[in-house]
Amino acid sequence: MKRSLLVAFSVIVLCSILLPTALVSAVYEGYETSNYLAIYDCTVDGAWTADDEWFDAMTPPNLPADFEWRQKWIMGDAVMQYFLIEFFTDDTDDAGDYFQICIDHLADGGSAPQADDIKIEWVGHNELTLYQGDGSGWVVYTDYTWETDVYVVDSLTTSILNDETHWVIEVFLNRGKTEFDTSGANYLPGIRVAVYDESTETLASWPPTSADVPDDWGTESGVYGEIPEENIPESLTLVTAALLSSVAVVVSCYLLRRRPKTEKNSTC
Image 1: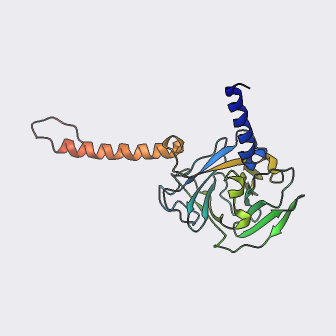
Image 2: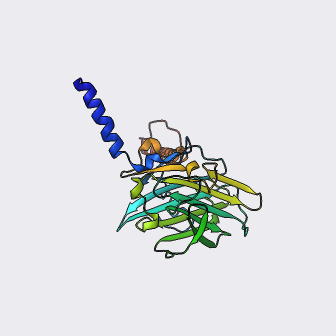
Image 3: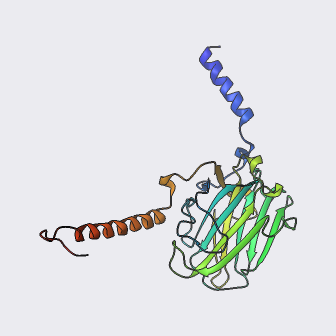
């Protein structure tokens, strides 16, 4: 066997051995996002505590017009995960409103939820229920501690992303807990995020698929690094540009006012 063919064969064998198990899972095409290491502090209070609080999180592709979600993480004793969800068209407080985050922690997919699949559901803006797959559907999961393992706060407010009053939801998830740990999937878990407005019967989800079929969820890739500039959401880039432009105008006005009186200048 020629040397080049032997090398190629060896590479294929090694790849087949080392390939992460996460890659066996089906992924809904076009719904892949990255989960970056946080640059800015995150306060789980259902609002943008600081203007730059979520500048360091990627906007997933192919989002519906109705909502947006983002995520980021920090490293403490374990990986601490944070989510932002905004439902732009919902400004009513309905008992049937909900949001869901579904995570396939081993990224093994399936036509029904498995034991490594968790669904976080916040109903009526005040009731948290977690579910775990049992191979055929969802069963209630209670082995967690509020605030230590999972924490949710939402509020009707405005944000940098939308200046109309709407629901803003922030979530904390301790991925050091075994049922939430994604290291077994090489930090490439399956994921689905959804929101529902009872008043208008509007359901928006990423991907636009069922919570009951992990094979049809999207996927996230955990990144040990900060978000690249080109991946910063365009809306936030525009905000930054506007701020810089304002600073430039102020500085220009100041410099013009400092010119000698013999020079003609315009006032700001």
